[in-house]
Image: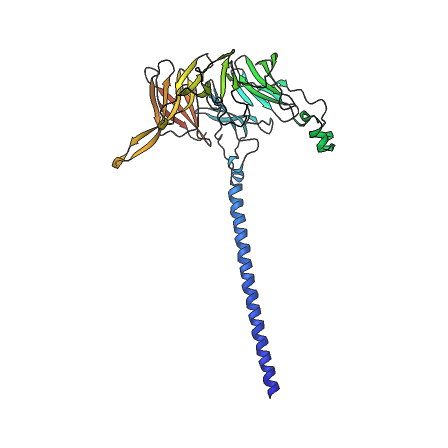
Length: 411
């Protein structure tokens, strides 16, 4: 009897251990399955978010600054390597006619471009762009805006022999410590600095990555009119046909902002004792640079017609930002205080205009949110860095800008 009882107890113990072990396994697998499902859900959500722009591409031109020519807006839509949130269709140079819509003139697939560099421009003769499809020999094209015909105007001299494969076989010491030719690691580059009515100005960077020439070409034929070697301690900015030398006032290339002097034909354009920041690239209608010196500050505006204007910086609390110039007016954003209900005072961004000849200031529109503006005095394109809106600019009987009328949002 005692043996039978012992066996019954052992059987009962085995059953409990088996059941307990099975329950532990089931709980463990439930936890593992929950973790796995959570990971799959996270991956699915990330996939939905990151591929939404690719699965549903944006149809607008985005937020890059364009150019106005004869009342028509030209802009580069998209990017050579678009981020998921920047995927746009079409991708390339687009023409937008107010009230009539847009059309793709130069597709990126046909002519790769780098929109982050000076790569295109427009005048009455056509649309100009630098094709970087062959990195060793970038090309400058002109597209006739009436016929659509494309003309090759200039080709950078390709590398005579590509010795990069040879350098890959060299040791680190041979290449870097014993005078290896670093210029063989670069490709030549073309930058379209200025598009005038009759001439184009290019910067041609040689394969050494440092030496460059300024080329002036006939805008219709591509004939090379002049070529000069650029000095190493300065560079040039352009206001129409005006070439402005930008000369650093410090040897520290990491200084932000880097103080510079602005000279035209060897003569400084700044007030005595003042230094400027590098000219703003996003300003439309001229060349704009903020300067400080001897307790004063302001902005220097250089217009293509030869005008030089000293613009006030405005009160510090106003946060004045100059955006564009056209037809004798300069446009800027200013922050003003507006009293609301219950005595609350809130800041409000106001688009204002200042007459360059008289200094008269007028309010154009209130509640404007933008980072850049392109206008010819009749049409106005405002971008917030992500999207662009088209407006018509209205004026009063005396020619003063007095309002904006929305033509199309998110073109």
